[in-house]
Length: 269
Length: 344
Image (cartoon, rainbow over the protein chains, first blue to last red):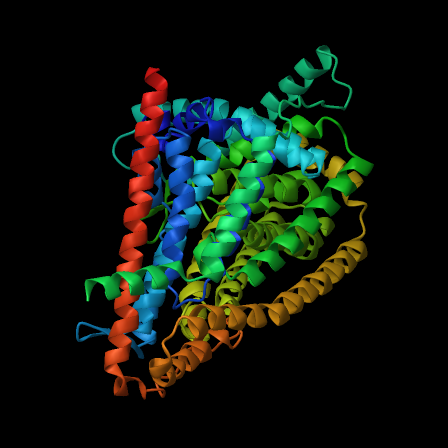
């Protein structure tokens, strides 16, 4: 049980974010806002509109390819993660059995269409969130959040959390290894041991926080943390934002898919 | 019980974001007023602790399956509501970004469901009320179990209401509740006992961690429950306002866009049957998707125009495939371009 395999390569995702591509160079604020707008557009589609969602794949594909991010990493996570949406969605075909359309003589019920649209929405939104973090360093994201006027206390402890996440996880796995080495089979995983285990981890954590605080004091900490501002808004940031949002708008309000399909159908005939 | 973006409508997601963001700013303001600067590293590191704690599985007594803790209530007991809310929110931010648990839009709902209830309902109204009088082990156990169970029940209920009012699922409300609430009752009981166990054990080893921080908490809480309740009331009103505003603007936009999409591109002779379908689609989607009830299968006039149906659905299918092909070609093109750029 190594740290990385257990934690789905979050370290790997982090290392991807230090590449230097067009997407990585964009201002984090712009990426955050555009991605958020993207998700709003995607979820605003009515539940029976499946085909209209298809053009939206262009945005994650752009982030993926322009950001030079391996498809495998993202795909694995999307498949692996959160069965909740599937769990809720799978009930739609059971309850909504009104036939919405007939395709080559096969009746397709509204439930299946809305289920599929939940899945497509899920893939679009989840992959966008992952790609956002793969294309932006976490420090950059926090800088963006701070400059978007989120409370500084929040942003700073978000940074602390991220920094010590790796340290604490290593420590936890060390403790777990020690426990496993001293116990057979399922012994040692009972609730009583767990409580003591996690309590000790908690005490160690608090003691670590005290040490960190003392270290900060000795380096001149006086209750104020200054954040480095590395990014400035440039022309390409504005262009990227303008172009993407207007593209989303066009995709949302003009049914390109149907227009394309009709012309294709007409030429085929 | 993380909400997912795909289960939310923009109105519901936006309203939950507004509520959570408001609470976040309020908490940060409260903390800025009176905070021991010692809390800054402590909060961050305890957030990381929650992640680490969730990595440790234990065997659930009766069933024999394994589970892990959520940890919201422990944070609240250790840090007090304001600081704990910020830590819970940041744990959820990391989960949304790195583990794709939930998503960016659902983040607002998740912070609300898993942050507000333990920090501002269960802790002040239940845990503190019980433990205030006597801090015996028995009182701590009862307080922890009750507060965790109630916090989780409220969270699960919110998940149901949010999904339902987004109009995405066809699950009837009753069935949905029956699916969610009992599971979370069981989870809550286990988590409650584990929480109590941790609080009691840590207290026996390092009483200062639990009790001394109580001093910090007393500072930041300001000791007034009234204020919290008033603030929550105001938040509820704001959220409700946002809700109704979204709800009233939403259907118009939707109807307008549907008309735009389907109304123009039709050849006159086909107009009648298509506008029939249009109306049907409109009926299905436009009546406030947020509050729509599951469709009863009464509207079965459909099969009378099978030919037109195939045409529209076929063009949808063809168009969809074409768009996907274009996207894939675009992706491959970008990859090739990138490789060429790297070589030169």
